[in-house]
Length: 140
Image (cartoon, rainbow, N blue to C red; front, side):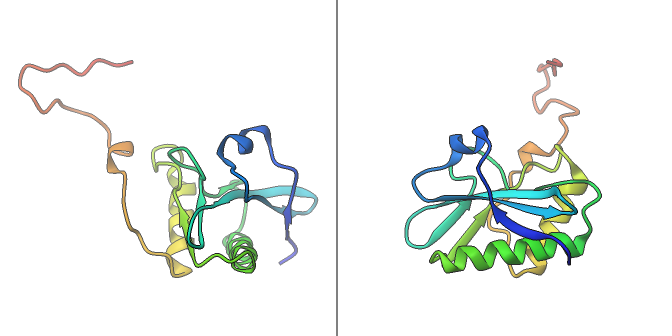
């Protein structure tokens, strides 16, 4: 792997999710940011992405190789362990936002020993028909 993990100066949007103890990580490959993730410390050794909000998780370029994503994740987990993490929670963006990135992220997390504890199916299912006979589905 030629990438490296860096705790960089966070983007303004990161400050919305961060609390006192938070890290914004970037995977730099060939001089460019190829992936990023932020984690915020909670209670009892829990670190979450996002610290607040509905979802976050890993963001990555489309051309990032799986090996690079796994290496980045391993470096992030090691850094969080150094910070006292005993539990890590990741809430990725819904599958409907980017099915390929979602699948890559879930595969990486599962292969790394993470387990699925909840699933927000309502964020990924297409509404094609109403449940009630007299209801209408109106596009926004």
